[in-house]
Amino acid sequence: AAWPIDRIDPVLRALFRAAAGEMLETETPPKVVITEFVDIAKAFFPDGKRLAITFQDGGNQDIWVYEPERDAMTRLTSGGGLFASPVWTRDGGQVVYGMLGSGLRWSRADGAGQPQVLQAGIIQIPTAFSRDGTRLVYFQPDGNPQIWSVPIEAGRDGLKAGKPERFLTTRYTDRDGSFSPDGRWLAYASNES
Image 1 (cartoon, rainbow, N blue to C red):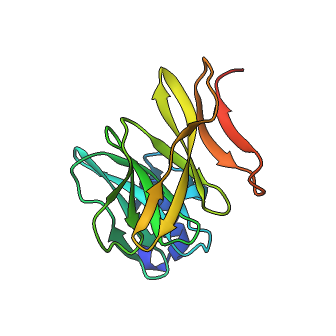
Image 2 (cartoon, rainbow, N blue to C red):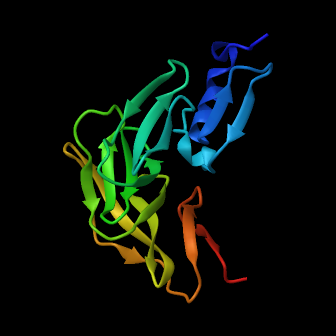
């Protein structure tokens, strides 16, 4: 007997979708094949009711918001490039992501409007907002990937970036920065050791 996909917990379905998993309905329980890594913790908005995820279709890679409780998808980008690494703003109103070859972009989380330029650049990969939402950390290749941060101002017209600041300069690959809860520290991955 096949196990209907609609009987699987919506959050579990969301995790599989976010991980580019494939659910096959021919087995009980369904077989799940994970085809791509995704940082599930960053994908979920803190309320646990929405995920910002990336789907690849041919030569394009787009950002979507998935709501497991409604099993609904909202598309934030529409082809024309490789969009990656969605990060939620603290209020959940916008999603910031990198557009490979063009820097940082943001979109309203409800899908209204068009993607907007936050900061021009070649390759910039956002990784986290500070707890108060006023600073975004990202990394970009400068020889080796290095960590940067930029002040962010949220206003009536959306997000605006201030002057970017390099966090540190090393001869190593430094990436995936994340602020401590009090905002005083920045943890990151490095191949230094």
